[in-house]
Amino acid sequence: MCNPKNDIQSVKPDNDSTKKCTGKCKECREKKKREHSTLIKSLALLTLLLVTTLSASAQDAAKELTFWDDPFNSPMLPLYTITTLIFIMILLIAFVGFYLVKVVNLLTVEAEKERARQRGVVYKPRPTWWSKFMKQVNDSVPIEEEASVELDHNYDGIKELDNHLPPWWTWLFVGTVVWGAIYLFVYHISDNLPLQQQEYQNEVALAEEAALKFQASQPQAAIDENTLAYEKDAAILTSGQNIFTINCVACHAKDGGGNAIGPNLADEYWLHGGSIKNIFTTVKNGVVEKGMPAWGKNMSPKDVRDVAFYVMSLQGTKPENPKAAQGDLYKPEPAAADTTKVQASL
Ligand code: HEC
Image 1 (cartoon, protein in one colour):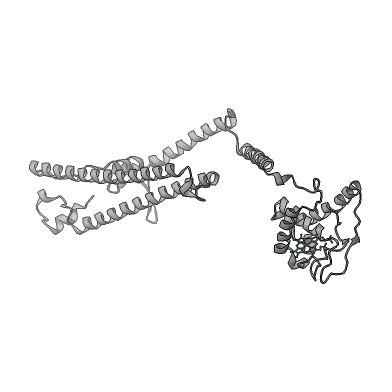
Image 2 (cartoon, protein in one colour):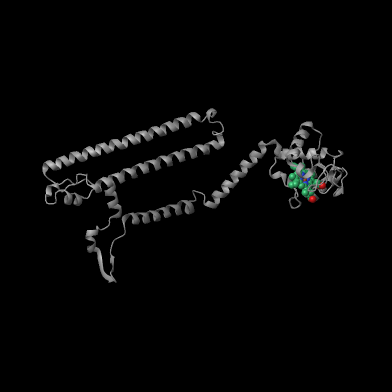
């Protein structure tokens, strides 16, 4: 850990028995300081990592349970609280354990130093498991002995050492080969697990199933141009009027009379057909190239129906500044002819 040379030179250069570092030399102190700050940094990083993973998984769960919408009434609250407490406790225990080990180590080292002193031998710190491990995985020839592996060629002062592969590299390589064999067997020979493409298709199938379920659970999803029949329902018309006021007046005026941008919706002339199905389709799909947005993208089918009913209810009203008629005169027709018209306008 500490370089005895410095101490010997600065303290007692000629006394062999003091050839051990007391740990007080400048180098040792700085090294200790460095070690300490690295330790604190890694502990902080570890805590941060754990906390982020914990909150990330909590958020995943929240998507179904909407935990974050109302955390205090969520049924998951006790579980999360206990998990957090246990987590904090584990952290504390780890912290205390770490310092206990450190103290025990310190005492052992002191005891060993004392024993060495009594026996009159130089104290040699025992290698830590980390240094043993590093030695094992690197297994390099120490710099002092490098001459023994030096090859006898020399290009302009550049020499080559005949080091063998470091064991960590070899094991990594062997590991990848073994992993490759396992992968090949599991995915391509035994067909136990789905390949990426299959996995993707499975997920798409699942998502489609979920989408169908969702659609089935939404009654308004059944609202489309095929099932629509206009009726003067007060609730629908009020809702439709609200939607119209918020979204449509800018281009169709507040009474539907039209303005420089949008056509008159109160007259009997229509660019895209005047049946309720036509209106619904126009509002839903828009006439994007002419400046009429496709509201079906942002509105539920129910809202599109409500506002379409409201537009229909404007028939026969007298707007303040009606825009000149555009399109064809629309006369209510029998259902069959109407359907053809819808298809034509689609
Ligand atoms: C950004 C401007 C704009 C807004 C906002 C807008 N529209 Fe339009 N709308 C138009 C234009 C422009 C047309 C004419 C399209 C064409 O020339 O084919 C139109 C056409 C229509 C038509 C067909 C009229 C016909 O003659 O066939 C209906 C119905 C309609 N809009 C309803 C609505 C409703 C309902 C809303 C609100 C939800 C709305 N619009 C919001 C610009 C707008």
